[in-house]
Length: 212
Image 1 (tube, helix red, strand yellow):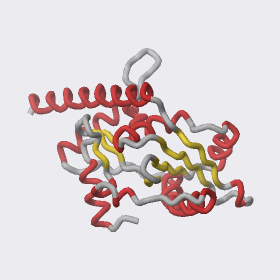
Image 2 (cartoon, helix red, strand yellow; image 1 turned 30 degrees about the vertical axis):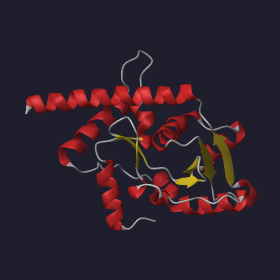
Image 3 (tube, rainbow, N blue to C red; image 1 turned 90 degrees about the horizontal axis):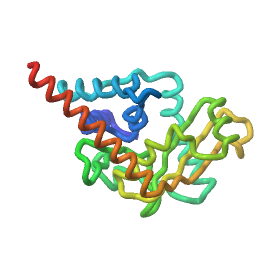
């Protein structure tokens, strides 16, 4: 758990950067090929962060707060079930933030590190969503962009997708784990999308400078 000072520094370091947790929004396009609302809104958030040097605070919903509250418990459950220890990202990078080695203003803050090659991404969803994921039995497509971006920024090979719901009575059914190992094509696609997105952000930033 971060201290208030660490949390402030963490937010400041991420301000104005495309982060893995928002990669899905950066890749949001409508069926007609035009930018979706999530992509357009995210561009404006990053511009605002650059202008103010402050990270834009997003509204924390009840579902998001639930995820924050039970992330540590989910990690403990994963370690108990698998016998695998999770390392704190802050031991591998300042504030646990990994900047992409080649793409400027592209960063990731993974939930944890596993061994020399792995990461872990923890989700504590609603019971309905948890049931959907267990029935499907695979890593949800909606979370793959985030996980691929994390791997691209850290240089690691695979990421454990971990879903956890403490509200389920049967303790043996509370945890859902699937390992995701994207191939080079998938990683290149996300990196290309990140570059395209950041070029667009820079273009809008230049327009703001001219307008000023």
